[in-house]
Image 1 (cartoon, rainbow over the protein chains, first blue to last red):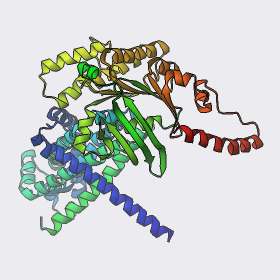
Image 2: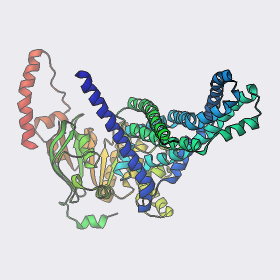
Image 3: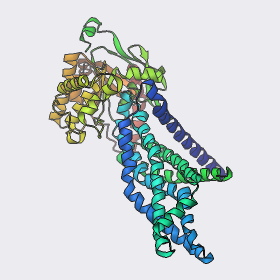
Image 4: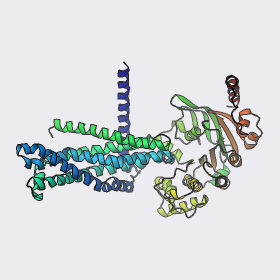
Length: 264
Length: 284
């Protein structure tokens, strides 16, 4: 009985959290898409500098990680494929796995670590130092002022980063291909491109946009619900990272299943 | 500036009225029915110890907390029953200086002060520039517009926050603990600034503080609240000469009676309770 009521309250908490995320997302969408036509301009400048932060500055670390992931994938795939004498299929395996799954996912996880946590910390610190209250007393919506530019930046940058991550993963795989599987670099890249269908890439990009929405919503919501005191900022940041990773995987599962049953 | 308007308006017209205001956090009620008026051009100081509910009162007055019952009338508009758009309209008429300043760390002092103007008006940049200079001059911070808030001292941060609160020429200015965290000399400077705003612009000012010296210096009237009830409301003279035990205790800084033994403690609990209730009941 105890267990059932625990389960029930946990489920309700989870659902109400999802509700808060959706409401935050909807309000941010309103300020990004609708409000600019009602004379409340979006802070475009802010969105661009945010995009620099979450996107461009993530490139070095993301490149390195996805390059290695590509190489790891090639090694793991080759381990099996070698048994069937099909080592040349490594290029296909790496390209498809990267662009359908690992490219978007690894990108999301890197962005969670760099930006999701930063959103929670930034907004949380502003909450603690009464800056959010100050915005409200000045009749400036914190959602429009702080959250909307982040949404816009993430929704544009995450797919861009994902494409880059796919490319770097394929490049990583090519290192193995050239060294161990008698490919030339050009032939490896050609084989990768030939093996990819357009929908392999688009499904990955659709996912990455949804990941961007999820990461921003969680990071900003955790920041906005920070309690009083500096230690609460740390708690919010941790929560943002943990919840984002979990929800990104859930969103990933949902869309992967959707594409699977829709025949994509 | 609305000086002409103020001279023609009568001193007795309330700018802000509270009617039986109650505020709760969840199950716990913090303010138990607060009523008072603030007249145009007066400075009201809200006094109270930690946990008395004075900060909650201030947060409710500026619309950061929703009252659970009662009315807040700002120039006749009920804050508790407004749409989001009307709320924004009301908020443009008030300015708030937060305890720690609450300046945006990623913007310069100038950008901070100009922010409400950029957000709410369609003024030219050059006009905003002029207003910005004026506001900074009013608070004694001319020449600091390109500094970041982190480069300012505590007192300067407060002044910059006041400049930002003044940017939209508010009709009511709220201060949360203006002298908190400042040394006595700097704190006196902030008091002087408040007096200056009152003298020069006849602004309606509401200050929440627990600093008695500063309160007596700047107040026209004082409101003492304790445990969510009004204990006393009166002019500074009335407060000084008050014989009410709670008021005396607060003004003379007498600590809560020491408890020496278990019996004393029980006695204090049983004796204190009805007493505190009746005194709160009489005035509140």
